Image (cartoon, rainbow, N blue to C red; front, side):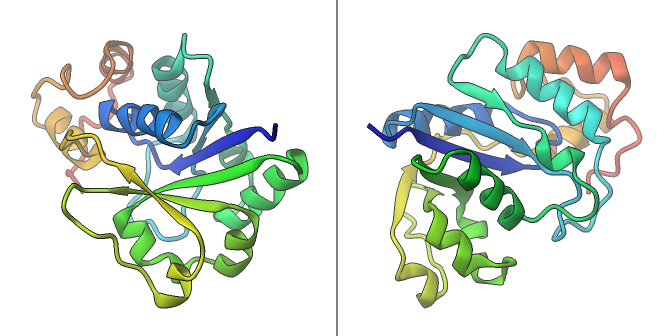
Length: 198
């Protein structure tokens, strides 16, 4: 039987409990063998400066430890120039020619998917899995909606990396928002203390 792989990209700045809950939900809902976590190098659609890739990868490594079906894949952080999902999908398809690939995205990404570089080629290589808020029907460009996509139940955790960075900058605790190892790393490295909450 063909391997089923979930591809979960993002800045993960920092990784938090809602990311982990969504990946767990995807494992179950899509019967995935593994989820590949793909921290972005230089996302072409991000306006703000990000925490160095080495720190974001280190936090992910701590968060995913002991979970064999979660695999850290740092290829985008090792690539020069802007990070494009298209390049990663091409590489992964070449490495896993027989696998069924599912790209895990949020509703906002789904709505703007038709603006992504090479989006038509991406949809030829994989299936989209959209994390949808309860009671909200995800919308997307009609051309995107013609392709097969799956609705993922979104865990009821209202957590964002933006809010976490703002809390750290304000000196507030984040222990309930991120795994304990990640909270310790942020404190030890002094991350986000000068953040503006952007």
